[in-house]
Image (cartoon, rainbow, N blue to C red; front, top):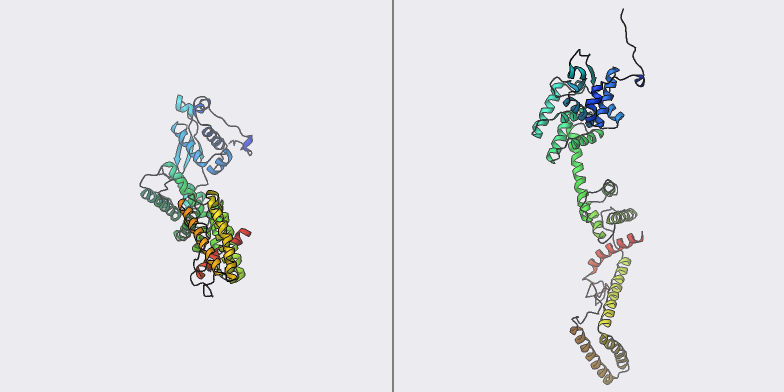
Length: 427
Protein backbone atom coordinates (compact mmCIF):
# COMPACT_ATOMS: atom_id res chain seq x y z
CA UNK A 1 0.00 0.00 0.00
CA UNK A 2 1.27 3.46 -0.85
CA UNK A 3 0.87 6.44 1.42
CA UNK A 4 0.62 10.03 0.23
CA UNK A 5 1.42 12.94 2.53
CA UNK A 6 -1.41 15.49 2.58
CA UNK A 7 -0.48 18.71 0.83
CA UNK A 8 -1.08 21.90 2.76
CA UNK A 9 -3.28 24.23 0.74
CA UNK A 10 -2.64 27.31 2.87
CA UNK A 11 1.02 28.22 3.27
CA UNK A 12 0.30 29.85 6.64
CA UNK A 13 -0.88 26.49 7.97
CA UNK A 14 2.42 24.74 7.14
CA UNK A 15 5.31 24.14 9.55
CA UNK A 16 8.94 24.99 8.79
CA UNK A 17 11.76 22.87 10.19
CA UNK A 18 15.01 24.75 10.65
CA UNK A 19 18.12 23.11 12.06
CA UNK A 20 19.37 24.43 15.38
CA UNK A 21 22.82 24.65 13.85
CA UNK A 22 21.51 27.31 11.47
CA UNK A 23 20.01 29.29 14.35
CA UNK A 24 23.03 29.00 16.64
CA UNK A 25 25.95 29.08 14.21
CA UNK A 26 24.82 30.74 10.98
CA UNK A 27 22.06 33.20 11.82
CA UNK A 28 23.90 35.43 14.38
CA UNK A 29 26.58 36.41 11.85
CA UNK A 30 24.23 36.97 8.92
CA UNK A 31 22.58 40.14 7.68
CA UNK A 32 18.88 40.26 8.58
CA UNK A 33 17.82 40.44 4.91
CA UNK A 34 19.88 37.33 4.14
CA UNK A 35 18.17 35.42 6.97
CA UNK A 36 14.74 36.47 5.68
CA UNK A 37 15.61 35.25 2.17
CA UNK A 38 16.87 31.91 3.50
CA UNK A 39 13.83 31.22 5.68
CA UNK A 40 11.19 32.30 3.14
CA UNK A 41 12.79 30.28 0.35
CA UNK A 42 13.09 27.24 2.60
CA UNK A 43 9.44 27.51 3.55
CA UNK A 44 8.44 27.43 -0.12
CA UNK A 45 10.85 24.58 -0.84
CA UNK A 46 9.59 22.38 2.00
CA UNK A 47 5.97 22.88 0.93
CA UNK A 48 6.96 22.07 -2.67
CA UNK A 49 6.05 25.50 -3.93
CA UNK A 50 8.07 27.89 -6.07
CA UNK A 51 8.57 31.62 -5.73
CA UNK A 52 10.16 34.04 -8.15
CA UNK A 53 12.74 36.62 -7.22
CA UNK A 54 10.20 39.30 -8.11
CA UNK A 55 7.60 37.84 -5.74
CA UNK A 56 10.18 37.28 -3.00
CA UNK A 57 11.47 40.86 -3.30
CA UNK A 58 7.93 42.22 -3.08
CA UNK A 59 7.02 39.99 -0.11
CA UNK A 60 10.18 40.83 1.87
CA UNK A 61 10.38 44.48 0.85
CA UNK A 62 13.89 44.23 -0.57
CA UNK A 63 15.44 44.42 -4.04
CA UNK A 64 16.20 41.56 -6.41
CA UNK A 65 19.87 42.48 -6.22
CA UNK A 66 19.67 42.04 -2.47
CA UNK A 67 18.28 38.53 -2.95
CA UNK A 68 21.19 37.64 -5.22
CA UNK A 69 23.59 38.97 -2.56
CA UNK A 70 21.90 36.71 -0.02
CA UNK A 71 22.37 33.58 -2.13
CA UNK A 72 26.01 34.49 -2.78
CA UNK A 73 26.49 34.87 0.97
CA UNK A 74 24.86 31.54 1.88
CA UNK A 75 26.79 29.78 -0.87
CA UNK A 76 30.05 31.18 0.51
CA UNK A 77 29.14 29.88 3.96
CA UNK A 78 28.20 26.46 2.57
CA UNK A 79 24.53 26.66 3.58
CA UNK A 80 23.33 26.21 -0.02
CA UNK A 81 24.51 25.02 -3.39
CA UNK A 82 23.67 26.68 -6.70
CA UNK A 83 22.60 24.62 -9.70
CA UNK A 84 22.88 26.73 -12.86
CA UNK A 85 20.02 26.18 -15.26
CA UNK A 86 22.10 26.76 -18.36
CA UNK A 87 24.59 24.07 -17.48
CA UNK A 88 27.51 26.39 -18.17
CA UNK A 89 27.60 28.42 -14.98
CA UNK A 90 26.41 31.54 -16.73
CA UNK A 91 22.62 31.51 -16.52
CA UNK A 92 19.99 31.53 -13.77
CA UNK A 93 20.31 29.00 -10.97
CA UNK A 94 18.26 26.87 -8.60
CA UNK A 95 19.11 26.65 -4.90
CA UNK A 96 19.79 23.43 -2.97
CA UNK A 97 19.60 23.75 0.82
CA UNK A 98 22.50 21.84 2.35
CA UNK A 99 21.88 19.50 5.30
CA UNK A 100 23.96 21.34 7.90
CA UNK A 101 24.11 18.41 10.35
CA UNK A 102 25.46 16.12 7.65
CA UNK A 103 27.97 18.74 6.53
CA UNK A 104 29.30 19.40 10.03
CA UNK A 105 28.95 16.02 11.79
CA UNK A 106 28.43 13.43 9.08
CA UNK A 107 25.64 10.84 9.09
CA UNK A 108 22.81 10.02 6.77
CA UNK A 109 22.04 12.83 4.45
CA UNK A 110 18.44 13.84 3.95
CA UNK A 111 16.98 14.32 0.52
CA UNK A 112 18.24 17.67 -0.83
CA UNK A 113 15.68 20.42 -0.68
CA UNK A 114 15.64 22.47 -3.91
CA UNK A 115 14.05 25.77 -4.78
CA UNK A 116 14.12 27.47 -8.15
CA UNK A 117 14.93 31.06 -7.21
CA UNK A 118 13.04 32.36 -10.19
CA UNK A 119 11.07 29.65 -11.98
CA UNK A 120 9.46 32.26 -14.25
CA UNK A 121 12.80 32.90 -15.91
CA UNK A 122 13.01 30.49 -18.79
CA UNK A 123 15.65 31.67 -21.19
CA UNK A 124 14.78 29.32 -24.02
CA UNK A 125 11.29 30.76 -24.70
CA UNK A 126 12.86 34.20 -25.06
CA UNK A 127 15.69 33.03 -27.26
CA UNK A 128 17.95 29.98 -27.27
CA UNK A 129 20.88 29.41 -24.94
CA UNK A 130 23.30 29.72 -27.85
CA UNK A 131 21.90 33.18 -28.56
CA UNK A 132 22.18 34.29 -24.96
CA UNK A 133 25.71 32.93 -24.68
CA UNK A 134 26.59 34.87 -27.82
CA UNK A 135 25.00 37.97 -26.28
CA UNK A 136 27.10 37.59 -23.12
CA UNK A 137 30.27 37.23 -25.20
CA UNK A 138 29.46 40.35 -27.25
CA UNK A 139 28.82 42.37 -24.08
CA UNK A 140 32.11 41.21 -22.59
CA UNK A 141 33.96 42.32 -25.75
CA UNK A 142 32.28 45.73 -25.69
CA UNK A 143 33.02 46.22 -21.98
CA UNK A 144 36.51 44.72 -22.19
CA UNK A 145 36.01 42.54 -19.13
CA UNK A 146 34.42 39.30 -17.93
CA UNK A 147 30.87 39.57 -16.67
CA UNK A 148 30.30 38.84 -13.00
CA UNK A 149 27.51 36.66 -11.64
CA UNK A 150 25.64 39.84 -10.69
CA UNK A 151 26.04 41.20 -14.23
CA UNK A 152 24.73 37.97 -15.72
CA UNK A 153 21.72 37.99 -13.43
CA UNK A 154 21.01 41.61 -14.36
CA UNK A 155 20.99 40.70 -18.05
CA UNK A 156 18.61 37.80 -17.40
CA UNK A 157 16.35 40.22 -15.53
CA UNK A 158 16.35 42.63 -18.50
CA UNK A 159 15.28 39.79 -20.75
CA UNK A 160 12.51 38.54 -18.49
CA UNK A 161 11.27 41.68 -16.74
CA UNK A 162 11.55 44.15 -19.63
CA UNK A 163 11.23 41.68 -22.55
CA UNK A 164 14.42 43.18 -23.95
CA UNK A 165 15.89 41.60 -27.09
CA UNK A 166 19.65 41.14 -27.66
CA UNK A 167 19.47 44.01 -30.16
CA UNK A 168 18.11 46.39 -27.52
CA UNK A 169 20.57 45.23 -24.85
CA UNK A 170 23.58 45.63 -27.14
CA UNK A 171 22.33 49.07 -28.17
CA UNK A 172 22.15 50.07 -24.49
CA UNK A 173 25.69 48.79 -23.89
CA UNK A 174 27.00 50.78 -26.89
CA UNK A 175 25.18 53.92 -25.77
CA UNK A 176 26.46 53.68 -22.19
CA UNK A 177 30.06 52.89 -23.11
CA UNK A 178 30.09 55.85 -25.52
CA UNK A 179 29.03 58.09 -22.65
CA UNK A 180 31.40 56.33 -20.21
CA UNK A 181 28.49 55.29 -18.00
CA UNK A 182 29.38 51.69 -17.22
CA UNK A 183 26.94 51.03 -14.38
CA UNK A 184 24.66 48.05 -14.99
CA UNK A 185 22.02 49.81 -12.89
CA UNK A 186 22.10 52.73 -15.35
CA UNK A 187 21.92 50.35 -18.31
CA UNK A 188 18.94 48.61 -16.74
CA UNK A 189 17.03 51.87 -16.23
CA UNK A 190 17.81 52.84 -19.82
CA UNK A 191 16.54 49.50 -21.17
CA UNK A 192 13.43 49.71 -18.99
CA UNK A 193 12.70 53.17 -20.36
CA UNK A 194 13.19 52.10 -23.98
CA UNK A 195 11.10 48.95 -23.79
CA UNK A 196 8.29 50.72 -21.92
CA UNK A 197 8.03 53.06 -24.92
CA UNK A 198 7.94 50.19 -27.41
CA UNK A 199 11.50 50.78 -28.64
CA UNK A 200 12.35 47.18 -29.49
CA UNK A 201 14.71 47.62 -32.45
CA UNK A 202 18.00 49.45 -33.01
CA UNK A 203 16.41 51.65 -35.70
CA UNK A 204 13.63 52.79 -33.38
CA UNK A 205 16.17 53.52 -30.65
CA UNK A 206 18.37 55.47 -33.10
CA UNK A 207 15.41 57.65 -34.11
CA UNK A 208 14.51 58.21 -30.46
CA UNK A 209 18.09 59.08 -29.48
CA UNK A 210 18.40 61.53 -32.35
CA UNK A 211 15.29 63.35 -31.16
CA UNK A 212 16.40 63.08 -27.52
CA UNK A 213 19.86 64.51 -28.26
CA UNK A 214 18.27 67.40 -30.15
CA UNK A 215 16.03 68.13 -27.19
CA UNK A 216 18.92 67.78 -24.73
CA UNK A 217 20.95 70.28 -26.75
CA UNK A 218 17.91 72.56 -26.85
CA UNK A 219 17.42 72.38 -23.07
CA UNK A 220 21.08 73.07 -22.40
CA UNK A 221 21.20 76.10 -24.70
CA UNK A 222 18.11 77.71 -23.18
CA UNK A 223 19.24 77.08 -19.59
CA UNK A 224 22.61 78.65 -20.39
CA UNK A 225 20.87 81.68 -21.94
CA UNK A 226 18.90 82.08 -18.71
CA UNK A 227 22.10 82.03 -16.68
CA UNK A 228 21.69 78.53 -15.25
CA UNK A 229 24.55 76.04 -15.03
CA UNK A 230 22.33 73.22 -13.71
CA UNK A 231 20.43 70.73 -15.84
CA UNK A 232 16.77 71.43 -16.47
CA UNK A 233 14.25 69.77 -14.17
CA UNK A 234 11.54 67.54 -15.62
CA UNK A 235 8.98 70.35 -15.22
CA UNK A 236 11.30 72.86 -16.93
CA UNK A 237 11.82 70.40 -19.79
CA UNK A 238 8.07 70.00 -20.14
CA UNK A 239 7.56 73.76 -20.32
CA UNK A 240 10.37 74.17 -22.87
CA UNK A 241 8.82 71.43 -24.99
CA UNK A 242 5.60 73.48 -24.97
CA UNK A 243 7.51 76.54 -26.23
CA UNK A 244 8.95 74.69 -29.19
CA UNK A 245 6.45 71.92 -29.96
CA UNK A 246 3.08 73.48 -29.09
CA UNK A 247 3.57 77.25 -29.31
CA UNK A 248 5.84 76.82 -32.35
CA UNK A 249 8.72 79.13 -31.44
CA UNK A 250 12.14 78.60 -32.98
CA UNK A 251 15.39 78.83 -31.03
CA UNK A 252 16.16 82.39 -32.11
CA UNK A 253 12.81 83.64 -30.83
CA UNK A 254 13.15 81.78 -27.53
CA UNK A 255 16.66 83.17 -27.04
CA UNK A 256 15.30 86.64 -27.79
CA UNK A 257 12.80 86.17 -24.97
CA UNK A 258 15.60 84.90 -22.71
CA UNK A 259 17.62 88.06 -23.42
CA UNK A 260 14.87 90.11 -21.78
CA UNK A 261 15.13 88.26 -18.47
CA UNK A 262 18.32 89.89 -17.18
CA UNK A 263 17.89 90.94 -13.58
CA UNK A 264 14.62 89.01 -13.16
CA UNK A 265 14.38 86.90 -10.00
CA UNK A 266 12.68 83.99 -11.76
CA UNK A 267 13.78 84.27 -15.41
CA UNK A 268 12.26 80.93 -16.42
CA UNK A 269 8.71 81.91 -15.50
CA UNK A 270 9.26 85.40 -16.93
CA UNK A 271 10.27 84.00 -20.33
CA UNK A 272 7.31 81.63 -20.22
CA UNK A 273 5.01 84.64 -19.77
CA UNK A 274 6.70 86.60 -22.57
CA UNK A 275 6.34 83.74 -25.05
CA UNK A 276 2.70 83.15 -24.18
CA UNK A 277 1.97 86.84 -24.79
CA UNK A 278 3.84 86.73 -28.09
CA UNK A 279 1.82 83.70 -29.12
CA UNK A 280 -1.42 85.51 -28.23
CA UNK A 281 -0.40 88.59 -30.22
CA UNK A 282 0.65 86.51 -33.23
CA UNK A 283 -2.68 84.69 -33.23
CA UNK A 284 -4.58 87.98 -33.08
CA UNK A 285 -2.47 89.46 -35.89
CA UNK A 286 -2.78 86.26 -37.95
CA UNK A 287 0.98 85.92 -38.35
CA UNK A 288 3.64 83.33 -37.53
CA UNK A 289 4.94 83.47 -33.96
CA UNK A 290 8.50 83.82 -35.23
CA UNK A 291 7.73 86.87 -37.38
CA UNK A 292 8.43 90.27 -35.88
CA UNK A 293 5.44 92.17 -34.59
CA UNK A 294 4.95 95.34 -36.68
CA UNK A 295 5.09 98.54 -34.66
CA UNK A 296 2.37 101.11 -35.37
CA UNK A 297 3.14 104.81 -35.74
CA UNK A 298 1.17 105.43 -32.56
CA UNK A 299 3.43 103.04 -30.60
CA UNK A 300 6.52 104.61 -32.19
CA UNK A 301 5.31 108.08 -31.13
CA UNK A 302 4.73 106.83 -27.57
CA UNK A 303 8.22 105.36 -27.57
CA UNK A 304 9.78 108.69 -28.58
CA UNK A 305 7.87 110.36 -25.73
CA UNK A 306 9.16 107.68 -23.38
CA UNK A 307 12.76 108.31 -24.49
CA UNK A 308 12.47 112.08 -24.01
CA UNK A 309 10.84 111.72 -20.61
CA UNK A 310 13.54 109.27 -19.57
CA UNK A 311 16.33 111.60 -20.76
CA UNK A 312 14.75 114.60 -18.96
CA UNK A 313 14.22 112.59 -15.78
CA UNK A 314 17.82 111.39 -15.72
CA UNK A 315 19.06 114.93 -16.43
CA UNK A 316 17.01 116.20 -13.49
CA UNK A 317 18.57 113.55 -11.25
CA UNK A 318 22.07 114.60 -12.35
CA UNK A 319 21.19 118.28 -11.86
CA UNK A 320 20.01 117.66 -8.29
CA UNK A 321 23.21 115.79 -7.60
CA UNK A 322 25.29 118.74 -8.84
CA UNK A 323 23.23 121.22 -6.83
CA UNK A 324 23.94 119.14 -3.71
CA UNK A 325 27.67 118.92 -4.37
CA UNK A 326 28.20 122.42 -5.88
CA UNK A 327 25.61 124.89 -4.54
CA UNK A 328 27.20 127.65 -6.69
CA UNK A 329 25.89 125.89 -9.81
CA UNK A 330 22.32 126.12 -8.54
CA UNK A 331 22.82 129.85 -7.89
CA UNK A 332 24.16 130.36 -11.42
CA UNK A 333 21.30 128.37 -12.97
CA UNK A 334 18.71 130.45 -11.15
CA UNK A 335 20.40 133.72 -12.35
CA UNK A 336 20.56 132.36 -15.91
CA UNK A 337 16.86 131.57 -15.80
CA UNK A 338 15.99 135.13 -14.76
CA UNK A 339 18.35 136.71 -17.31
CA UNK A 340 17.02 134.44 -20.02
CA UNK A 341 13.48 135.71 -19.41
CA UNK A 342 14.67 139.35 -19.48
CA UNK A 343 16.62 138.73 -22.67
CA UNK A 344 13.55 137.33 -24.39
CA UNK A 345 11.52 140.41 -23.41
CA UNK A 346 14.26 142.80 -24.54
CA UNK A 347 14.41 141.26 -27.99
CA UNK A 348 10.62 141.16 -28.22
CA UNK A 349 10.39 144.96 -27.77
CA UNK A 350 13.42 145.68 -29.95
CA UNK A 351 15.74 146.89 -27.16
CA UNK A 352 18.98 145.68 -28.77
CA UNK A 353 21.23 147.54 -26.32
CA UNK A 354 19.63 145.86 -23.29
CA UNK A 355 19.57 142.58 -25.16
CA UNK A 356 23.31 142.77 -25.86
CA UNK A 357 24.11 143.53 -22.25
CA UNK A 358 21.97 140.62 -20.99
CA UNK A 359 23.48 138.26 -23.59
CA UNK A 360 27.00 139.14 -22.44
CA UNK A 361 26.00 138.58 -18.81
CA UNK A 362 24.47 135.23 -19.74
CA UNK A 363 27.63 134.19 -21.58
CA UNK A 364 29.75 135.04 -18.53
CA UNK A 365 27.48 132.94 -16.32
CA UNK A 366 27.87 130.01 -18.74
CA UNK A 367 31.65 130.32 -18.51
CA UNK A 368 31.49 130.47 -14.72
CA UNK A 369 29.25 127.40 -14.70
CA UNK A 370 31.64 125.46 -16.93
CA UNK A 371 34.57 126.44 -14.70
CA UNK A 372 32.89 125.13 -11.53
CA UNK A 373 31.91 121.86 -13.24
CA UNK A 374 35.43 121.29 -14.59
CA UNK A 375 36.89 122.09 -11.19
CA UNK A 376 34.87 119.16 -9.79
CA UNK A 377 35.68 116.83 -12.75
CA UNK A 378 32.30 117.10 -14.49
CA UNK A 379 31.72 117.72 -18.22
CA UNK A 380 30.07 120.96 -19.30
CA UNK A 381 26.96 119.12 -20.51
CA UNK A 382 26.70 116.82 -17.49
CA UNK A 383 23.27 118.16 -16.50
CA UNK A 384 21.93 118.31 -20.07
CA UNK A 385 19.43 115.65 -21.28
CA UNK A 386 21.21 112.76 -23.05
CA UNK A 387 19.02 111.94 -26.03
CA UNK A 388 19.52 108.72 -27.97
CA UNK A 389 19.51 110.64 -31.24
CA UNK A 390 21.45 113.90 -31.32
CA UNK A 391 19.93 114.85 -34.67
CA UNK A 392 16.28 114.94 -33.62
CA UNK A 393 16.60 114.93 -29.81
CA UNK A 394 14.33 111.88 -29.74
CA UNK A 395 11.42 113.56 -31.44
CA UNK A 396 11.60 111.43 -34.58
CA UNK A 397 11.33 114.60 -36.68
CA UNK A 398 14.21 115.78 -38.84
CA UNK A 399 15.33 119.43 -38.69
CA UNK A 400 13.79 120.15 -42.08
CA UNK A 401 10.65 118.17 -41.30
CA UNK A 402 9.65 114.55 -42.01
CA UNK A 403 10.89 111.36 -40.29
CA UNK A 404 14.39 111.46 -38.87
CA UNK A 405 16.55 109.46 -41.31
CA UNK A 406 19.20 108.76 -38.66
CA UNK A 407 17.22 106.89 -36.02
CA UNK A 408 13.78 105.94 -37.34
CA UNK A 409 14.45 102.25 -38.18
CA UNK A 410 16.54 101.76 -35.04
CA UNK A 411 13.77 103.28 -32.93
CA UNK A 412 11.21 100.98 -34.59
CA UNK A 413 13.19 97.90 -33.52
CA UNK A 414 13.60 99.27 -30.02
CA UNK A 415 9.90 100.15 -29.87
CA UNK A 416 9.00 96.54 -30.68
CA UNK A 417 10.94 95.27 -27.66
CA UNK A 418 9.66 98.12 -25.48
CA UNK A 419 6.07 97.32 -26.42
CA UNK A 420 6.52 93.59 -25.67
CA UNK A 421 8.07 94.30 -22.29
CA UNK A 422 5.31 96.74 -21.42
CA UNK A 423 2.63 94.20 -22.33
CA UNK A 424 4.38 91.50 -20.32
CA UNK A 425 4.58 93.69 -17.23
CA UNK A 426 0.85 94.35 -17.47
CA UNK A 427 -0.04 90.62 -17.29
